[in-house]
Amino acid sequence: MTRHGPGSQPPGRTPVGENRWPLVAVAGLLSFVAMLDMNMSMGLAGPLGGRLADRYGARPVAVAGAALTAVGLLLFVPPGREWALPQVAWRLAPAGVGMGLNGGPAQALVMGAAPPGRTATVGSSVQPARGLGFTLGPALATAAWGLAAGDDGPTAGPALAAGAACLAVPLLAPRRRGPEPASAKTTGAATAAHDR
Image 1 (cartoon, one colour):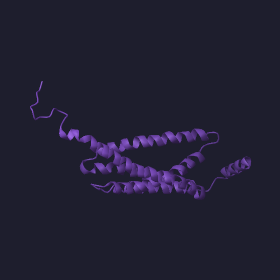
Image 2: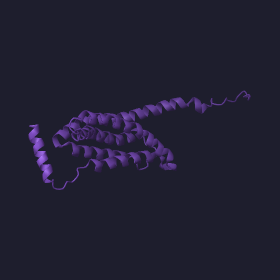
Image 3: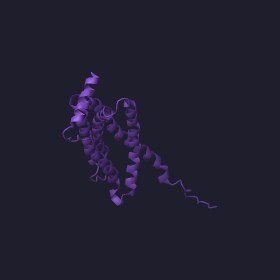
Image 4: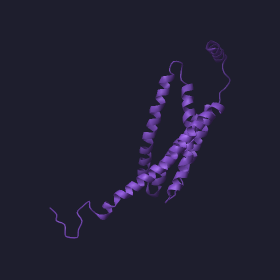
């Protein structure tokens, strides 16, 4: 059993350990404010994305939203060593606007691609997929940060997220189609006539 002298601190009771919790609370509050900026941007842009999709089509708005999300996340990739809260917030804002613009139109694309009689099933699969993304995203970013060497840690997570957002752009982009076969035209006309 170890005895501590009159001026010594027992293990775990160092001055740094005692002052740690206010720092953790401030860091948590700053993270909340930064993420609130992104979530507010997403919430405000969501209805706008729906209106634009109704006017111009779901696919172009979904692509524009994914591109804006990628731009916002790419702004984190250049190394900025001591960013203050406003410097983080203005980078998160375009990513939030992009996600807001993308959400509704992407949902409309999924619902529009559902086969007849399966709309609810297809629609219900979107929410778990979105939730999985919000769950795995921070975990993967943290893992990328931990696995990156040296000073590249803080940019590894955003680089991974930006890469995923950049990948979404061509996946959502309209595909060029060749001439439609005659049988497809006939089937499409019959379906349209049946739906009237």
